[in-house]
Length: 280
Image 1 (tube, rainbow, N blue to C red):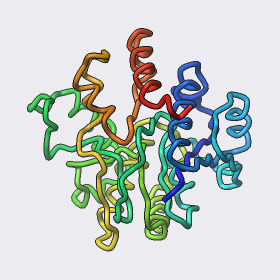
Image 2: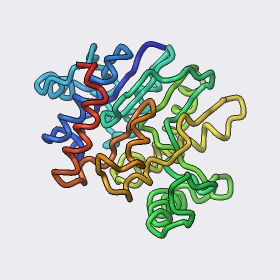
Image 3: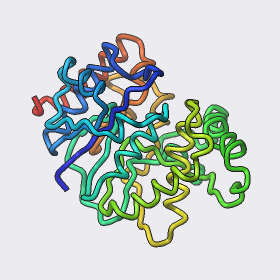
Image 4: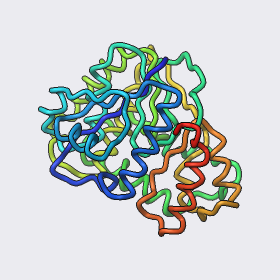
């Protein structure tokens, strides 16, 4: 597999990680790092292509596609799945806040996610052994409550113990994944138009994983067993061993860069820049 793809859909709702000073800096870092190991291609709408070129985000290829120009749903996650639905050859899809630190190890599964966003079945080493309220509240607000509201008839069919994060997805067999995505769009057609941040995550991450899991013929895997979300409760410092262990993996998902103060942000940016400096 020699390609990493990205998606950008311009919506009426400004993305909080978008074309801000930090957002542009992180997007450049993501694409520059991916260029070291893969051919990068952005699938986007016309406005997205204009913004990427103006801000010099260095994709190897930018492809404007009608399925995103004409995509009416104000939902970034579903736009990503729409791009995946159109693929016919193996690919890795990553988000623009993911920094690639090495080439991904080969996987033979139909689909491999980067990591679980929620995994109530275990706790990673080095992290508190208790289930903290903030984690439970996050899971409740983003996934359980939306399942009750939008898919009440399927509550007993869902596995609420695990939810994947879709920032990294390695797809070796695009055809069964295409079928799943089409099923998801049909399933959510009555409520996917109206934008809501938690509903966005519910559809893109929770429902997608549930549908894949329900199909016995689709093989699936998790690339990194640790929960990246636990990094959010740690102090970001250069000498923090918990943080540094994340830099020993194939990728780093910097999902909270916009929440850091200036020193914390600069410390991590310099670490990532040094880790990927040979890219430049």
